[in-house]
Length: 242
Length: 236
View 1 (cartoon, rainbow over the protein chains, first blue to last red):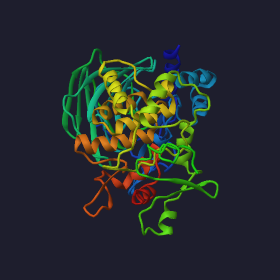
View 2: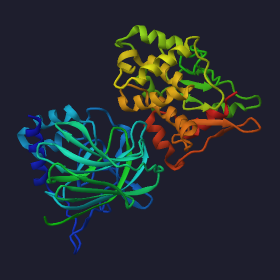
View 3: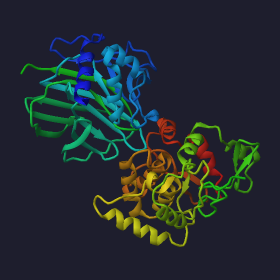
């Protein structure tokens, strides 16, 4: 049931109005929050779990996952309205489904229906979190709600690939290098996907070179964990043909 | 006077910084026990308001009115080991720890510390959480972990793993700061750890990204940085 409901959710996201982010000549799209409103949810991402808002860091607008207001099982604010807008009569099912496993804050990028091959990167700055300080790239988001994430965890200093199936998280692969990062400093997490080949980098330092069990196909976005307070910027995607 | 907050008068032995918190004018608590010569205005600047969000957040977490913990025997043993008397009254965690000014624990502290460490050494073993030993029981775990580096390591890991429903975020943040400084040689994150300089003055231990300190402290349910520094300077 959960898979079906999530499937409906993701289909609806695809159908929802998207703030266009023009790709450059080489097909790269760099998401900017410059035209977004500070203190509001982003228009370019659909926050599903957690409090994702546009905030100001210096003179720049960035995407902020605000772990101060995180609560287990609490989906993103305004879920009922979003669900109604996205799913029509099925919104109650959706709400129940999200509430059932709302634990890891995720925001799905609205500007790309299906990512199979190419590169995704995001800049992030950890600001805090008593229990977690996580910044991740969300990908392979399936219609049934399953997804993959490559994330950096500031409480463990590592980069790990996780898979989520039916709301259950499973460890897949940990990059061998521990990389402590200071809070309040900007870093870049990047992945490349070609068929079943997954590679990742943290600040251009190789982290993963891993073979997935199946090719990637699905939506993408950003990921975090529990009470993390992290700013994201320059979410960049460069899809490539198979 | 405050009933028995972890850092208050009721618990006595757990008031590791010799703070004596007095309720003044109903809702306001003022730090007492200031150094000789500290002005009244300095003490007033350290006032803790019971209506502040961070105090209310701790109070909400500490509410044990439902008595819904599962292991009363372990809870009682933990409280005795930490020298606590339940119920605890917020705030129990001010986020001010001065190196060398450790809390006075109960006579069974060593035995309980060893018991917790032995339990944690078994992979997949149960670990106390709020659901098992209540809020006071978990604050007792924090107090024990704070003075034992081995227990601190496993307790911090388990607390983070269990999530915010099972441990007081302010305790976790304080313990992590201490763990980073003592065991990892890294800077603290939240600004809860202090030490004494050669002249006996309380000084903040090295800290990372102080620009966003209040954001982190708010997220952890700790007082604003300015108040924390003020409280630290009142330590005897």
